Image (cartoon, rainbow, N blue to C red; front, side, top):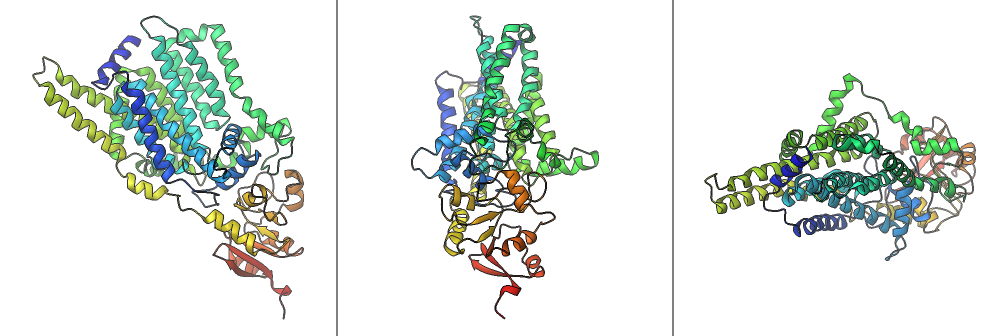
Length: 546
């Protein structure tokens, strides 16, 4: 079967399988996408915005200061991104955004590599890579500080490495490709320290290896070395308890005990978002997914993906089972979650569909090229021209709508984070309390070290632990101490927090989409606009003159 797969790949390759062309083409595709990510890159500190930008402002702080993020910890992303902040131009916020552009572009390059490993066709591989890289979901996560572009990179790299293992073990000279299998084990551990959804690659990869060469599971030495490298890949998790013992300025979760460490890395505190799949909800959720899907892959690309899946089922059942398992698992996991930014969880499914689209394009191009057979009666020039036309159409499919997507994800003029910082720095009284939610004010006090006289409180959902509490500045308290001192219950609008803070001094609030002026007015506050629709002062009525 393995030789049939290899011969099928050669047939799909057509005229574009010469040795020097594929890596250059892959680099060009990755670089082109990287330029687009740079052109739309957020220029600096981020802000909180529902549902598109929930965590970026806090992630910038954690990467810049080597702190502890919200579950599931993301230690690999934190450390890799922190290293990038030392490079010029020295703007930590910009560099954390740039890290995502780098990760996203590399993910696209490795999707190209994985597609080429499946098809041996440069044009088809480029079509699949562009389809993935220009999808709105990945693009939107590749121009701001987030962990999902790195997650896509690890997943694409894992898929490519396993496909490369199969190709190398099938060499005519009999050379062993098991070293690629061991690299895949290491990558799997690293991937899981960035995002737990990568864990699906373990059963899917095992299924692929079993279908290709089940004897690998009976090689005890290979199994032990693979398990050891997988554990080595998990070592970044050690960052969490080690760094927490150093009392970093910002710690959204304290992993200092074994129980709390497991709670952090497993994301068990977020299980309330995992609602499961009931048959009555499935149709509606699939409808939502279909809406997201066409914003990332147009109908022509989806048609190519359908052709590609059928082609894999006929020619390469191991790859069909591998990618099909991944698609189904990632889709079911995402559908079972009830979160504001669930569309981001669909990104891995778009990766699989892009690989199928590449396979579909290669299948059709291979069929066109087969017409150049001496027995077909068609001239080579006519077939070559037809091949070029079809290949050009497929490339157009992959870039269709790019201008509209560009406009939809462009963050190059995003300055609300900076405007928020300056509004607070210039207008808030000394020693005041500012009520906010996951705002750029953390960047102001922890990275820029400005206005450290302020108290920052966050009473809003989502919370970690009991009560309404996220994190608090000054940072000389552990999360548990801050919980006892500042936590409030049933305080969705922050009214109780404002009442407590008003007993000590002036109180301000940022409007991040969670503020209800009417709720504060009914509670006895006047809501006074201070700056730019961003900053408001909460003044208790009894404290006003007269």
